[in-house]
Amino acid sequence: MDPSIFLLGAIAMGTAVVGLFFLRFWRDGQDRLFLWFALSFFLQAGNRIALALSARPNEGSPWHYGVRLLSYCLIIAAILEKNRRGLVRPPSTVPDLPSEAPRPTAAT
Image (tube, rainbow, N blue to C red; front, top):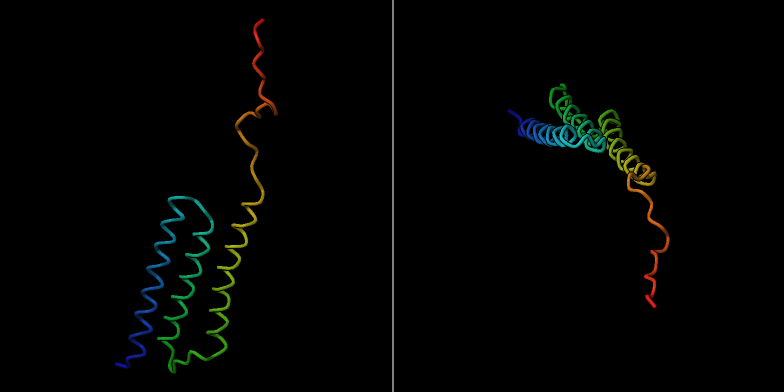
C-alpha cells in the first residue's frame, strides 16, 4: 500500500469529522455560517477521496485545485454573509427609552 494513499485517507477522514462537527454546530444554533463551513469541509473530504481513488493521484492537477478553490470560496462567502447579516439589525423588541430622564422636582 502506498503511504500517500493512506495519508490521503487520513486527511479525508479528518476533514469529514470536522465537517460533522460544523454540521452539529449548525443544527444546535441554526447559524448558516456553520452550514457553509460543513459543506466546505465535506467538499474537501470528497476531493481527497476522489484523489485517493484515482488511478494516478496527482494533487497538482487543475481539477483538484478547482475543487479546493470552490471550497475556500464557500468559506469566504460564509464569512461575508455573516458580516452582512450583522450590519442589518433587526428591530428591537425593547421599547425606546425617553432621551432624557425626568429630573426630580425640588419640594418647596
